[in-house]
Length: 170
Image (tube, rainbow, N blue to C red; front, side, top):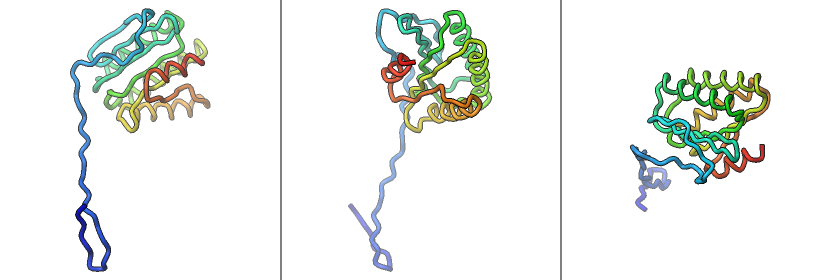
């Protein structure tokens, strides 16, 4: 490794800077758990939602930047479906999601608080990459929701399998 010396005799090393490259994949299959009990219930260019009948878990996989109107439409669908099927456990895969505006985070927060008030329990397992944009947004959402509730209803995981295991214990 190359180095240089300063006038004071200290040795400095050149450090090569690395740029992080984000691979944009246009078509990507959801990273979901395969099985016969899964039922795709919603799909658009920003989210795929699958219901696992056996475990009663609703799995969402978000990708890219979702404009506010489409985000709210998907969230409305999720909560209507959850109410209809009496679901209280969700997996929210945000590994490939871009920024979620604070107004949309607040919208989800209000929906969750209303759901808990009307139906009791609600748990979400977030699947996020460390320090990803989607993970940071989910963390902020979790912090605000935990402050309002006084207890934590969300868990954070590296993969869908661990998230499903955690939810099955609830």
